[in-house]
Image (cartoon, rainbow, N blue to C red; front, top):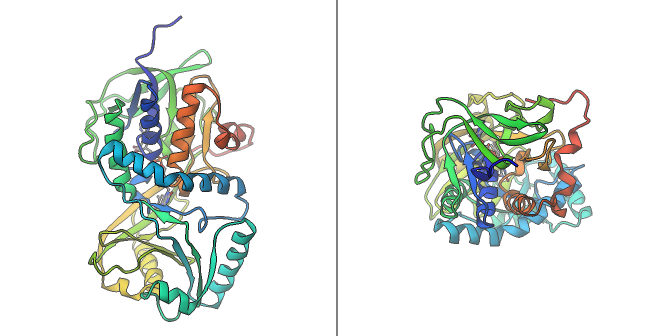
Length: 400
Ligand code: FAD
């Protein structure tokens, strides 16, 4: 019998998914190490923070809808727990989401979506133009109609990242600054990770989250949780087809800023080509492009133009706001747009990635389910349909 590993669990990747799992696992009494050279600065930093299972519903994604709804239901208590554990607010804001149509074509598309939402049993309300403008007086007079999803809320994903980092540290999880180069494999078992040499200090990280100095060499572990977002398919140590088939899906997004006491809108507003998410402090998120560009993270003039044009068509007063920041992130996409959650391939390896455009929403359900799996060895029912093995036999699958 080998000696006891230094950590019960090593989590590769400190985005919302890795941090959420690490926090829950440490609270359950496990010895947890998180490895990341820039924790919280991946897609989790770039996101808009919408918690929107209803307005994000897509044809052909019914199993994912059930998971998204379960996640949304957990958000109020999850937000309260993270805030209590960290002492940091996470900016959870109920308020609903109003999807609106600019013209007759938009309105027809919105009607199709509305009918689909009704067939899915979702809580939605069809509104006339006047009713939309009563809810959001800043909407353009030309708006043709809308659909209110009263249960689609938001969280400040950046505040969430910072709070989770503190909660992890307070729960005893150790944060190691560095990059995992490969998984350690003995026979048919993953036994830990090997860190890339010369990691150096993280390039950027939230305040108060200083990881320990980069360690050299190997970190043994009872179980390795692979939660490295869109980079999860690129580790060494295993054949590429034993790693999750995750790919980067580029998203460009803007932050505008205006006076906090004169908000542009009071709830999330969506058109067909853009969404506008008002924070409580005057910041307004405008997003986002969806691009298959590999690992490219260039912010383009065209994206800034298109996002602003689309936002101004819905909310003309956005033109008066400061353009405060441009952001590019890489969503971890999976072949069916649903996450990959659970044991994967060799013993000792658990995958938690592929959350694509709903990773912030899915954080509570992922963290709880993976922590339960780590504690019991049993795959919780909630995530059973999302096992990574569902792609194992896919011919010619892409691993990038
Ligand atoms: P990440 O946050 O990308 O974290 C992965 C981490 O792994 C990084 O910190 C990285 O440094 C680390 N890492 C990588 N390789 C290694 C390695 N070899 N060793 C150690 N660490 C490593 N979701 C929503 O729910 N609502 C939204 O409104 C929303 N809007 C979005 C808007 C945009 C523009 C984008 C890009 C995404 C959006 N998403 C949204 C999706 C959401 O951001 C992601 O699904 C989620 O953040 C994924 O979290 P993660 O922890 O898996 O990945």
